[in-house]
Amino acid sequence: MLRAIDRERFDVIPVGITRDGAFILEDDDPDKFALRAEHLPEVVDNGTRIIWPDSALSRELKVSDASGVRSLGEIDVVFPILHGRFGEDGTVQGFLELLDLPYVGAGLLMSAIGMDKHTTKSILRSAGVPVVPWVTVTRRDLDRDRDLWERRIRALGLPAFVKPARAGSSVGVSKVSDWSELDAALDVAFAEDRTVLVEQGVVGREVECGVLQGRDGGAPRVSVAGEIVITGRDFYDFEAKYLGAPGIDLVCPAELLPGELAEMQRVAARAFEAVGGEGLSRVDFFYTGTEFFVNEVNTMPGFTPISMFPTCWIASGMSYPELITELIDLALAR
Image (tube, rainbow, N blue to C red):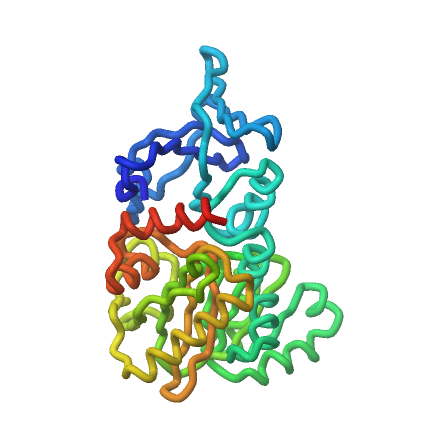
């Protein structure tokens, strides 16, 4: 995004967050943050500290470093390009709400809903959106009555997918093809969150589309569909999503009949509105040939050059820089 944003219109102040939670002034260098299998980028504490506005009456951003405190000017909008907990789950969004700073993407409530898979699926189901059958379980549930919960889980059938309730980018996800693999899969998921979902495996195509909030109160806009074709991996995992690992082909636009695409776009818009309808989302489906099941609603989808969200919008006639500009304009309008 640093590379693609329209520099004639926008001045960018890159803010990094270290593993310890310090907000620092980062380098405006796209190459520094390139995703490579041999080296995942990390924000390293450089001694600077971002000083956020001291009240909702100000939008002045400052930075302190060895030479003192200096102003970075007034900021118009924040683009929280963050995945997972403490970034995509409403925490940063709530922080920005307190400062009355405009920001891109879903608001606090939509972010929190979208981050929690159990809550998302419950809300979608109540809105009449088809979702994959699932069981939500905690360690305490298993300790209290292992036989009961194992019966509920086994009733889903094989294969099954075990996922942390609140994690992103397929972190902590395992495919269970034999029940002997269940305990190990639960351990991996519980390492990421105290609540875990076990989902029924669906035989079908994996298709996705991008959704943008409508302009001036209009209906959500939905892109063409993309398809994830698995050729040599168990599922679309972190390495395939972000590092271009082999075994996955991304096809966009997906081969769907006009009626199939129209139905997918209708369900995607309905799912988007059901969870809050702000900013953007990528809606992921399993298509059985007769029905579209919503798998997830991602409120801050991947933005790498191989990510499906920008790819689908580019295939729909919008360039990468135009997409970024549209998201910022939506934030300012809201």
